[in-house]
Image (cartoon, rainbow, N blue to C red; front, side):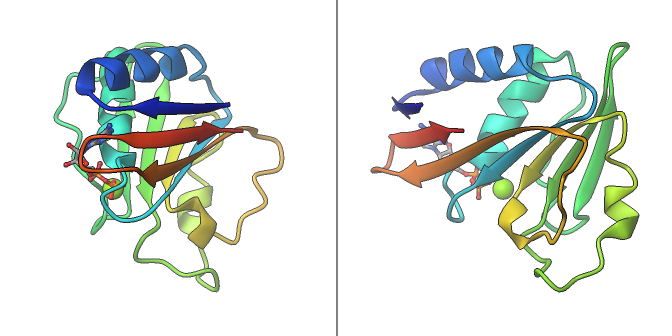
Length: 134
Ligand SMILES: Nc1ncnc2c1ncn2[C@@H]1O[C@H](COP(=O)(O)OP(=O)(O)O)[C@@H](O)[C@H]1O
Ligand SMILES: [Mg+2]
């Protein structure tokens, strides 16, 4: 499924749909260039899930963790990791949580036992992004 989104209202509606799929042991894998909109989408999804705190990009800390009454949430950014990196210390957090992972292609991790939703984001122009959901 491909969807082109050119404004924040549409992005928020899309995030709301994705939030309905959030569950324990589910990984949402977000890939696309720097500035594609991975963090922006994640912020809207976590808002829909009831996360009240400010959601910041985990580019430097790699992993941020949130908790709602229903769900444990991990927000990971693998931008600064590479495929050869040992990610055991992060992966052990994934069990039982809803995991949103930016730059998932940098992770050498099988994701077996997890439900996977994969989204590739392409920049069309300043305002428009194409979201391809697998
Ligand atoms: N349709 C859109 N969807 C998502 N972000 C958009 C869109 N149009 C413009 N943007 C902007 O693109 C930038 C995306 O940045 P960010 O979410 O940090 O990207 P990434 O995490 O993929 O590097 C933000 O400044 C955001 O406001
Ligand atoms: Mg980001």
